Structures are given as structure tokens and as C-alpha cells.
Length: 302
Image 1 (cartoon, rainbow, N blue to C red):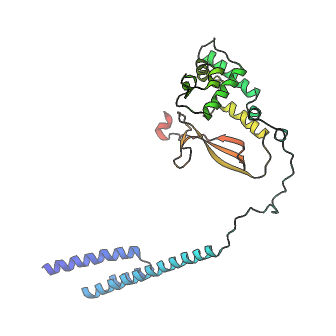
Image 2 (cartoon, rainbow, N blue to C red):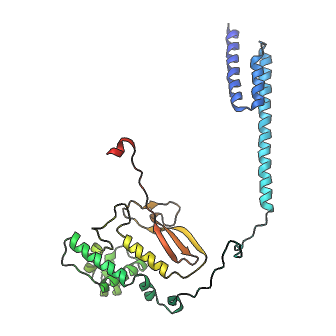
Image 3 (cartoon, rainbow, N blue to C red):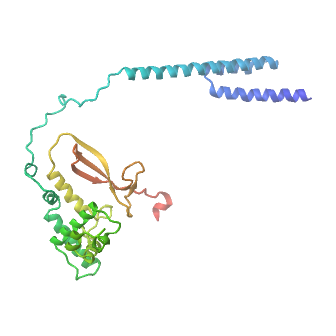
């Protein structure tokens, strides 16, 4: 009785093993297993021997396939090593490439320029007036402060203080006006009071809140972006080799287009797609706006 049960158990194990082999084998192994299952011999030793034959055949085929794969990888490595790699510039005499014309540099590049004059090429009177008008409108219309008013000269001083704060950084911006000699900045303190700087920071605007584009996530700064793009293109130092790449603007506030890129030097901020020269001059830049996924099904009706 026990021997009969053991024989049935062994036969079931052999059938399961056969199914596994059929799943992993090719056509040759399948044909051998079909032959095994079709035999009418009840000899357990004979069926076991045939199962072992199938297993050995599968192993041999797998070894052959692994050897072929390793041989192909070895040949590929040999071919890569035999190639004569060179580091050089791409030839400019291609039939599809037109010759680059000789262009005279712009006048502002041929003349001696100071950092102030170069900055004023981009933040000119038109951009300063844009900031003045929208800042005054925001203070009066949106905040109800009809006493506050500013002008172009004050906005230029305000921009200068921002540039200094980026060069000489302190933990808090109020420390520039402190009496402590370790943090006091005489140029900042004498040009503008701390309370006046706080008022300008509170009311600073470059767009009209009455005419905002709800589909544009950068509509608050879109007028300034557009005007800066026009000036970047206007004063572009003509160069043939250009590059298109992404650039991160550091930002730690709350904005729907803020991104986190773990492997970038600037991990938190807004991404810009820039067209730049080989020396780093940005000709055009475009903000990347992250699109939210629209709800589907029942949620789309809410």
C-alpha cells in the first residue's frame, strides 16, 4: 500500500517536472517530452532515464546559447577597441553647411563698457518704467495705499541693493542696516532706509493684476520675461556655435512649476530652456510650465 502511494507521488512529481521543462525548453525539448508522455511503458526507471535525458539536453542547449552570447559580446568589445577614436572638431566644410558670413561686432561690443553700462543695456528706461507703473498701481488699486509712490531713480537704487545682497549675503536682509560692524553695509544704509526697502519689496510688481492670463503660470512676470528676451536677442554677440539646454533658477517658495531635481547642482527651482553661445551668453530663454493632469470620469464633472 505504501509502495503504491509512493509510486503515484513520484509519477505526479515527474509530470510537474515535465511541465516546467516544457515551459523553459525549445521545440527540440518539447518533442522529446511529447515522446516521453506518449510511451505506454510503465517502467518507472525507463521514464526517469528519459526525464534525465531531456534535462541534460536542456542544460547543453543553455550552455551553447550562453557561449554564443559571450562570444558576441567579446567580438563587440574587440571591435570597439580596434576603432581609432579621435577628439576633434567637426569639419566646417560639409556640403550641407553654408559658410558663416563675416559680421562686424555690434557697436556696444567694440566700445569700452563698464558693468553699469552693460546692465543698463538690458534694464533700460523702458523696463524701469514698467516696474514703476505696475508697482504704483498695485499699491493703490490692490492694497489701497494711496500715499505710496515711487520713481525710476528709486527703483534703480532698489535693484542695486538686490545686486549687492546677492554678492554680500547675510542671513537676514535687515542686517544690512544694523549698527553691528560685522554686518552693516554703509552703501546700502545710506542709499535707502530699511522701512522704505520693505515697502518696495511689499509692493513690487511688473504686471497688471487686472489683465492676467489664467493659463500662464508665469503671468506675473511675463511682461518682464518678454522684454528681457527682446534685449537679449538685440544685443546678441553673433556666434555660429550655439547650444540649447536646460537651466535651473533657484527658488524655495511655493509655485506650481517649481521642480526638484536630485542630481542637479540647483535642486529646487524653476526650469528654463535656454539658447546660449559657447561663452554662456543667453540669447533666448523660455520657462517650463508643468501641466497638471486633468481628471477623468466622474472627477471631470466636478
